[in-house]
Image (cartoon, rainbow, N blue to C red; front, side, top):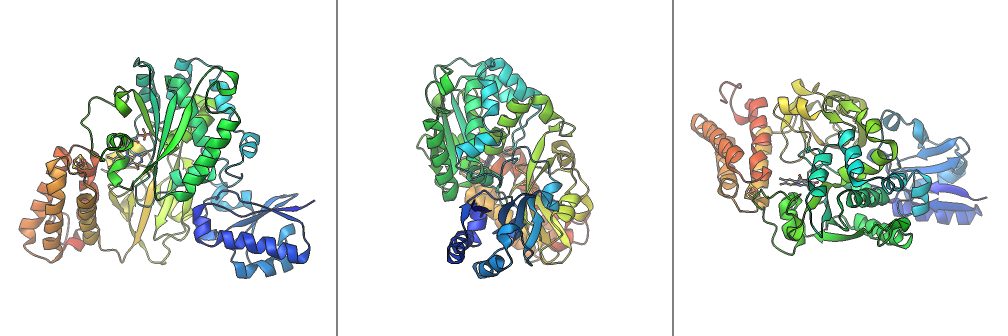
Length: 517
Ligand SMILES: Cc1cc2nc3c(=O)[nH]c(=O)nc-3n(C[C@H](O)[C@H](O)[C@H](O)COP(=O)(O)O)c2cc1C
Ligand code: SF4
């Protein structure tokens, strides 16, 4: 019987040499006459250990990492293929502290399976949610999602069940399910990981959404910068069609759902749902006025469910185990789990899926191990480029939508970017204005003109010019952006700018918050 070795195919592992390591393992095994099967699994999301190679043993899978090509011969010398001792030995994968402390629901299969093997997916509880959904009425499917308390994971945290109910109750011959896979936020990668490492869960979630609201066509709007996800999704979609999980008469039910991937050209604003639809319709990515809501008149003017990858990928487990099972995780009105993405200046960067309620401090130190530089963490930006910078004094805030709103911050898509004490927060504020200027779609004046004026004001402040005039001017400008922008790109740029000013006034050349008022 051949030995089974797992080498991740996730782009995080590939970028660190996983393909070369996989080849080296095959060649070394051949040289030594050892029968070996190399399975390209997804990543477990412990990026500092990638490429993390696992070997199947009778006690469970044993991990080694980070493995380089130059380590391979010595790993064989140490009988790693039977779990032998070696300096890269990490122990039983499931017992690794970083993984053991997580509550993986959406990412339950991630890293365990071959991402594009339908058999593997089904044997790891895949397609159980869809089988249940096929026996349920449309309102009952929507009710299960409503009962779960799931809120959109793309940023706005809107209740998914309410959105689906609107589309269900809007009569139309054609409706659409649109998956927002633009994942433009800085420091985020959970959507990418789902699509590369467990694409069937997204396909299943979208199929259930289609059944629930009566939509027969789905699109995944994928950012062009994710070529590995593109390949994995298309391979999985083809297999799902061949096996009767997509197309006409799904598994003999008489129900239809078609699905295809469309590539975006790489504009941050095309992650905003109405620009995304413009782009998908072949037009320039300009934000649309709302109302009408996409749920009433969306893609090609038809009722459309627009959901983030993680929202849709969380649906199969809800339909499999029930809304209440999912709702039992979390705190307050933030139910279920959130896949957090630890990035920036952090020792142990990676994916951490836990129930809402964990504090930032626990995340940064118990999981993240502190900064990569070893210096104190000065600030973290949570929720992408439009999220607030939080100082150390706010690290005990629980990850919960309402707790973050109470300190004028957002959880967003769960991206966490850490900065050590060498970061200059005035430069970061300037960068936020510049980001807004570069990415602005140009439809409304506060954002189009205001962001460019914002860069100029920040330059004045950074050079120490007339702070008594320029700091109030910056606040005034932020107020206009906040209240006068058509969408959250302009509307939220004040979050990083003002949080930097309020929490780190010394970086703006003023002694304290009162002087920065
Ligand atoms: C400027 C901007 C960029 C956005 N980018 C994304 C994105 O990359 N991915 C995403 O899912 N949602 C993004 N959103 C949020 C979407 O407009 C929308 O709320 C979301 O796709 C709805 O799905 P959900 O309810 O599942 O979160 C963005 C919003 C704005 C204003
Ligand atoms: S806020 Fe900016 S990105 Fe949004 S509609 Fe206005 S110009 Fe476009």
